[in-house]
Image (cartoon, rainbow, N blue to C red; front, side, top):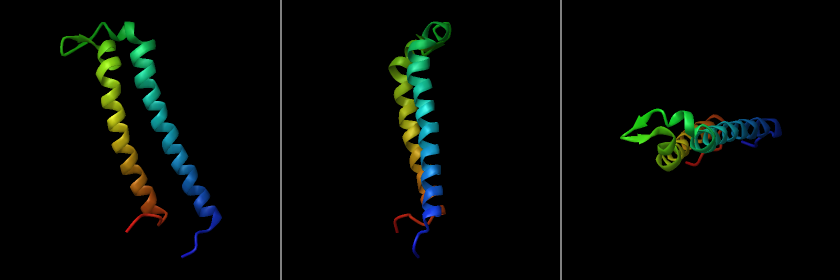
Length: 87
């Protein structure tokens, strides 16, 4: 089935929207929580360590791995929706 330009345009808009949302979350977690909001977050502790320090050292990594899985799941659904998935 040939793809219409409009259908692929919608596909790429949804793809870019997904990327922008996930990159925004990544930015907030890594830069926001690990650098900008480190002092207020350090009032709380996770495993004996200040929360701001934890986000800078561990939390950003865990969040990034979670975002990768979310991206894979979202893109698989999007590929099936637009019939561009691998068989």
